[in-house]
Image (cartoon, rainbow, N blue to C red; front, side, top):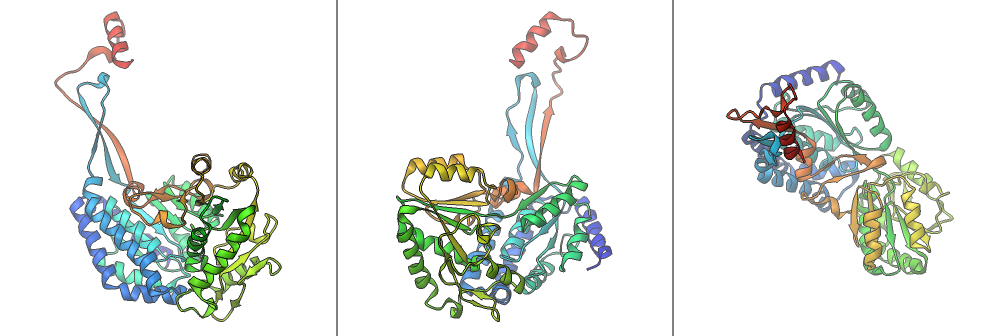
Length: 460
């Protein structure tokens, strides 16, 4: 799509928003219902597109994408009315008589840029939040997942007019053209490198942005953990979507004394969950493209691979792979893996590992498997990370009741449910001052001792 066409779409959306059409809460709920109906209608086609792009099974497509989208839209349909109400707050005595409140209002014209790893979920979920908050939206899906981008465009064009919600498909040229425009709000999910570029462009227009990025999310397993259950849950979360999950456990930090037991259980669980030959498992997906396939192959050190390591360049599949004896000097620890490679790093001192993690970049997620309540409390209170789980992985993002987002290098801002509505809203602080009394103490000349004393009483 040309830059001129993109500007034309945005100008029409500006006019539509300024008309006030998106403001009524009844309108927003009606649009959410349309979207919910369309997702249900095209559920089969969405699953087929996800299979074509990423090799996802129908079950995984519903569990991790379609079902979560439907859940989020349903949540917003039931709660947008209450979210949109003004909230009365306490009024200081010095402002008597008046009524103070906070009023959520839409930002206006928004841009949503989504990634390829969960292309349907991470496009339509923030879009539903934008709609609930009363915005217009231009949606830019990833060029790496063209089949899903196509069904997204089909659904959106069927539900909405382009002056309200529009899809811009394409690659870097379209991304660049979009970022040069002045939006009222930008929502981006993707890599840290591209996130920096997004922030540079939004800074030019002083446009607020939410960045959902990634990073190396650690998974701590100490000697008190239920090792069998830890291995079962870690294998699920690590190799879901072939490891192409922003909150997947990037690497395992295992207490040395239980490393052998954990390693054995992990290998056992890979065999149970994916079979003796995962590359032939129809429910096991593939790497998105040749570029990422080659990158991941380059991260595997054959001398440290203790399980897996098989690859198929024709199908772009990499078997669930475990590496042992890994240190920070290994290539696999130098970047976010974003693939089915599990490095195991050991530690002897929990105090030492906490200190080490405090010095690293803040991850999008952190997980701890432990029965030691004091240790769990220290991890959850002392370490800075986007979110996480205790004795599980990944599942913290599968709820509309908690915000999901990063911190520091892993992003800024959060969404899901009320947090998603808030992300796409500005809260105006308003004082409604009454007319029947006007206290004179704030006006010049400031001469009266009586008013000075009264002011101290009101403000102390």
